Length: 357
Ligand code: ZN
Image 1 (cartoon, helix red, strand yellow):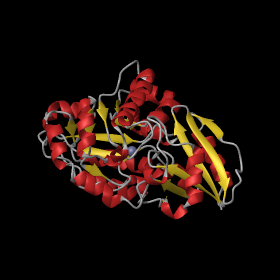
Image 2 (cartoon, protein in one colour; image 1 turned 180 degrees about the horizontal axis):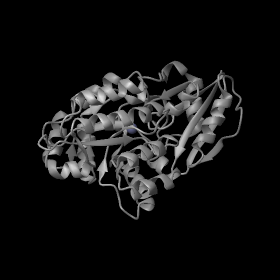
Image 3 (spheres, protein in one colour; image 1 turned 45 degrees about the vertical axis):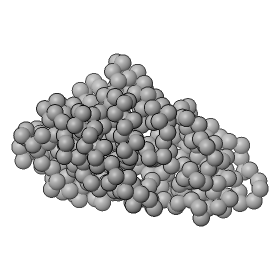
Image 4 (cartoon, helix red, strand yellow; image 1 turned 180 degrees about the vertical axis):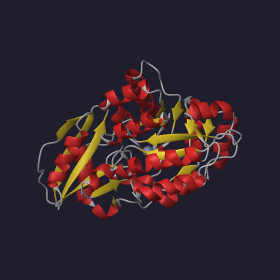
């Protein structure tokens, strides 16, 4: 068996391949910020005898790699040396951690996502954060739903931009004249500036979804601040200088400590009250039915335009829009919902599946 360690930085990715012995199979291979597809194709060519290894700050590649048939393992901090304030440990360190003790790593399962094996931990952190969420909401810095007086809903799309799905989502929204809010990953935004420009030109709203889709409970304050600042910078560059004022935590992950930091870091935290687990690909009809069954006045609807194969989300979107229009709902951007909602003190939905958000 061989191990391909995949690191990330502000410049892109690097891959180092090790075999089970002491030999390094290749020198570290760098890939630029726009070369994620080429990097995934490189890793794909090494499969099946080579497994891919990422760390838990990297939730932007596993879904895409698994969609091509690559086996992916997640290395958590206890298996790795300390990492820099922005970026993962090196690709060589990731590959060595896998070679040293693969059983200490977690093999990811496609329909369980990046947080495979620690869904309970995620849920426990979220449950411990209920009071902190309520406090943040009372201060006007957190929203999981608008007020029920207006028959309005907000469509939100996470993890892009990611071709071809983001463009297809934009086409559908344009056809129906519907606005949406896109919580973009910084690395994807930097690689797909033209799609950010198109979103802005069509009047959609931007949210910050971190640079690399990390598990927030593991981040330091410096790491969280850097993830948010770098992402805001690339979105602003492509959007006439406007910095996103909204932030959505990857996986919805949160702790009282992280929420305290987010309160200081300014952007309003946006959670959701309607989700279809579209990332797990249950079928377009199921995605549409779940949304239509849960949606009510003021709902914030979580969908995904990136992170893997999103063809089912694209197929479900016209059914969702038509179904909600038939029920008399108007579509608004999250900020418009928030402006009417004021404070949301009800708190978010208590449960979030591992890959949601
Ligand atoms: Zn996400």
